[in-house]
Structure formats: C-alpha cells, structure tokens
Length: 56
Image (cartoon, rainbow, N blue to C red; front, top):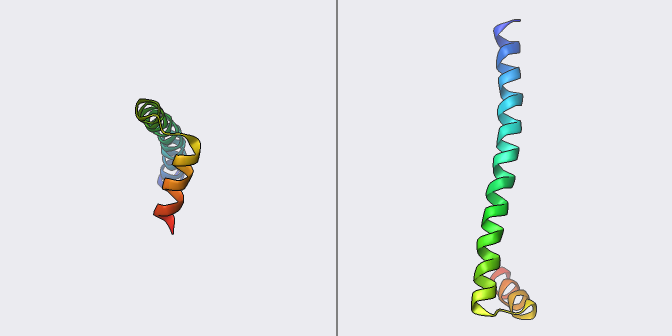
C-alpha cells in the first residue's frame, strides 16, 4: 500500500470517528437543552417564538 493510500484510509477512519463523536456530542447537548427547558417550564410555543425572534 502506498503512502497516499494509507493516508486516504486514515482519513476515512477519522471521518467515521468524527461522525460518531459529533452525534454523541449532539445527543449530549440536546439532553442538556431538554433539561433546561423542563427546569424553566418553557413551552414549545415559547421556544418557537424565542428561536424565531433570534433568527430574524
């Protein structure tokens, strides 16, 4: 296997690891947000309004 092929193989492995790690971190962040929403008693309508007002 050439050096280029080795690097390409490593890149594919790293991309897969990144994909898994990003999903795990995203799930963890979503859990934190969910806990905050429950703690602060924010309704879906309020959350939608907050998000909409921040985007525009």
